Image 1 (spheres, one colour):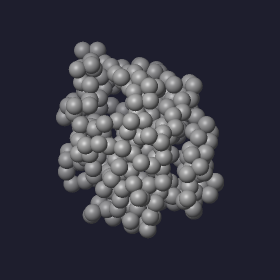
Image 2 (tube, one colour):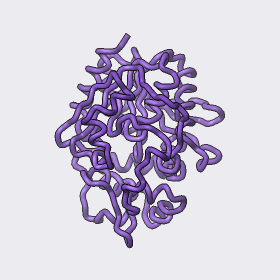
Image 3 (cartoon, helix red, strand yellow):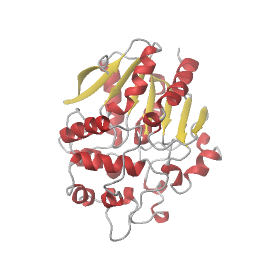
Image 4 (cartoon, one colour):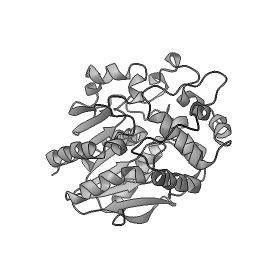
Length: 312
């Protein structure tokens, strides 16, 4: 971990934190929630040792990156624009993009808007999905579903305010490591779904939790609740999306995301390839939503095979 370097890049007046290591073809790692750059620690070191240059930014409002002046107006398009500035600032003409969870969305959207800058896309825990409110199956979801709860301004804030930052991150990691959709009962909040005696997943240490907690104490949850949850219904305005670059999807077979209505069939039927034609799909037995931290060696092997196949 000591060999990973840290810098700040001025992105339209906002200081964004970037972790980096290695030299060679560039891979940009885009985190999800409740993650930060640190969630890519295993992958960054692995690809650097294999002759690649790994970059992992903290999204605006996350971790060590600056807070936007109006967090409630942050969008996924901001993340796409931020990525373009980061690449330009570092004089990177082309890069691989690796996105986890909601990080897959700006990765794929960047590839749609700037295909000449992208060598390939790898997504973990989430496939390419169409954006816009018409594609979100709210009518199929219980009102206690965590995404619906957290889309309501103030709801998650009130729930989270009862706990310290470490407990919030701990509870979310435990919930999202399960194989069932996190759905609260009518008289229950999302944070109350986790019994305080429940241990952390064995692959996520107390030191890892402390690192996450420290970074979320710095950033708070204001922007992280905006993006992804409250910006999720945003439409990027591309009427016929077709990702032209090679791509790979890595999913854990026990990932709760596969219980999202229609998603497992969307992947297994090959329908996702209507939008990402050159797509490899890999399922890891026993894998959950945090697949890159749970099974780092297996994920690293898959990513490196993809990078070596498509590096120019």
